[in-house]
Amino acid sequence: MTDIQPVEALDNTLILAAEECPPEEFGNIHTFAALDDSLIRKLMAHGPVLIRGGRGSGKSALLIEAYRRSRTVKSVFAVYVSLRYLPLLQSEGAEYIAHFCLLLSQKVRDELVSQGIDADFEDSNDQATLQIELGKLAQSIGRRIVLLFDDAAHIGREKPLEVFFDLFRTLSTSVTSCKASIYPGVTRFGVRFDVFNDATVVDVSRLDAARLGGTFFLDVLRARYPDLASAERFSDRISVNEFANFIGRSVVGNMRGFVLACLRFENQPKIGVPEINSCILAMAQDYYWPLMEEVSPKLGIYEPLVEPAREAMEVIVDLACRQARGERPTTASDRILVHRNIVSQYAKVFEILEYLGFIYKREASRALKSGGRGPVYAINLCNLIDQMPQQRLTLEIMNEWLEGNSEPAQMHVSGQALSTIVLPPIPDEHGLTIFDKPIAILAQSGAYPYGLTDDKIARLTNAGYETVGALASAQDAELLKLDRVGEATVRRIRNVLYQAIWM
Image (cartoon, one colour):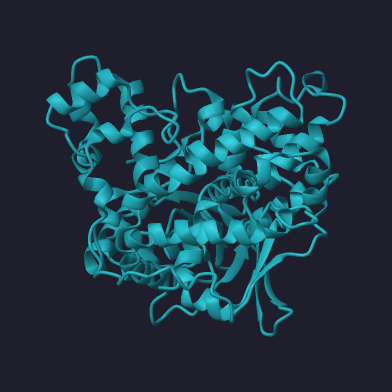
């Protein structure tokens, strides 16, 4: 599987991952705030960096933009490497190292050709040889090398992570800087990699950009949906900037959620609070809650925790909505403060919820009224409104949530909030069950906006590609031999496989 490949006949509104965006379109549909620029500079600078964020938070876009900008700097030779590569996902130890080194060797050579640089770079299948080759290359071209590894961590396969971080540490030298994207909750760094000393960890967060007065989400709206960014589309009570910020806050700053939410307004002639209310409820009911089922088969050993995660999210929104159900109802809390002992006990459950965009860790530690401390999580407003009395949104509630000044709900250690949730035993590491699923799950749907048609699914099934694993293992040349399957169809197949397995 390859990275940053052109996607023919694919609407910009359906490009949900930066890796799938045609290079010539990337600058037109991606925008970066001042905070992003600071992070991008770190990705271009010397020194190892890990950028951490949930699913669809924009990590890949930042890595690709750092790569694009680095190409204009004469003293830097940057290589973007997507690790969405099936052999890496299915191997570990020495086998993983061999696949990784050969993949990186090929990417370096491709980049040399792309930039018209006359330099040799030999294939390596071990880390020592690869490190030597990178050092020789840096010396011969007189540039500092920046390696940008995308999708370095897969939430369902933690074992290869230890090997990756060993490689990350080994390849980071005075002339080679390694950067990589990871998700919240990555803890398997191996014995040689010290995350606090061997890299700078930076969190990707756009939650603050959704505050009143911010323009980041408005800029994204203008880039992706220029017609929707017209003031004439909105009622007198709400501005286009307030709309963009509220949608951004509703999805806790998640870029993929923002794009999908905005897509629902394309055919709305006039947009006001009722239309926003309807969209938010629809996102909860046919995107966020079903998202758990979509992601479940790619969670590996943590697949049994999907149901506990769903139950925990229901408890969180119930606690947040309690004050809205009282005798003197007030606005539901859009954040929750959870005692650290509870977070520790249900650590992987909270990590899954954050990975999927149901919550976002807003503060690392705050004191609870009942004693003790814990993190503050921002709550996805789609799921919150879905549980509010009458499920009714008002302009006053919107403004209060955007201001972000209300007190968070609290989950006390002495309470029984999560006591009924039983955590199942975690099995030994095994393959992802997504590979055993029939390819019918890849059909075009809310979960897979650029999924396959019934006709293509039938053709692939008749050709023997009955499961996701079989289709993912197929070579492009094999697929192109099938009747009515051209290059555009193969690219579409690859993109939906990327989403099914990695996104």
